Image (cartoon, rainbow, N blue to C red; front, side, top):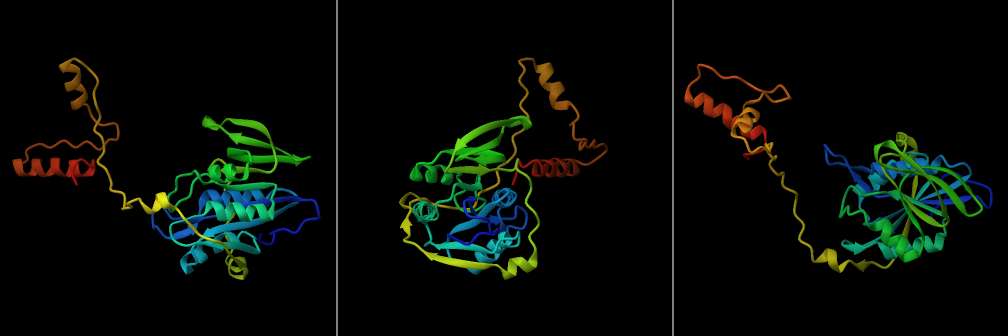
Amino acid sequence: MPHNAKSTASGGLNVAVLVSIGRHPLTARTRRADQDARAVEMALTLEGASVSLLHAGQKEREHEEAIRGYLGMGIDTVSLIQQQPQADVVPALANALRTGAPQLVLTGTRAETGEASGVLPYLLAEALGWPIITGLAAVEKVEQGMATVLQALPRGKRRRLRIRLPAIATVDSSAPAARQSAFGPAKRGAFEHLDATSEIDEALAAWQVQPARKRPKRLKIVKSSSARDRFKAAAAKADGGRGQTLSDVTPEQGAEAIFKLLKEEGVLR
């Protein structure tokens, strides 16, 4: 396992954070993943914790530059497990976690690239035989092999739970935001390359992957049996204030305005 970000006394909490490659939603450039960065932030704020980062994937320059975003948070070393394309990373990660024997494993709820199915933490918990908690918002205390944590619930609610360690916990957007990545520490940080056998994911190899296609918007459906009510709903002014009244225009101008509206609403491509 990698070296820790904060050296602690013997017997301190050993926390491993699984990090992945993120992708900016607007520019599509690689970066640190938001939820994984929040998991790193949570680990760094645990008092007396020894923090290590682990990433399983291909050795590419673009990926290493994205991983440096985590190093810029104050991490000295990130362990990179080399894996072939379309490999199932669960066995490699499970073996690394068995070797490192952390008490707590943190990771984001869902990756921003690749399959992004969100099942990796569950598969790891099954392989290791550890309990798993989802939607982790905060770790309150750890003592005598038990962790007291807050789990995020819908509508801003929180639930206090006690889980036996070792355990895996997923962190989502309800957790505190990650600190900014500093350029200097990011460049000074080191990678520890670990070799591991790549097991091909046969199910993934059989998939056909293609870019997602934007689907047209659904128009508002008026649920009424009365023709009068349906006409009133269709003629009502839109709430967004984007309505436009056309008067004294030619049929060509009217058709052009209707065509433009349908394009904006996504009905026509």
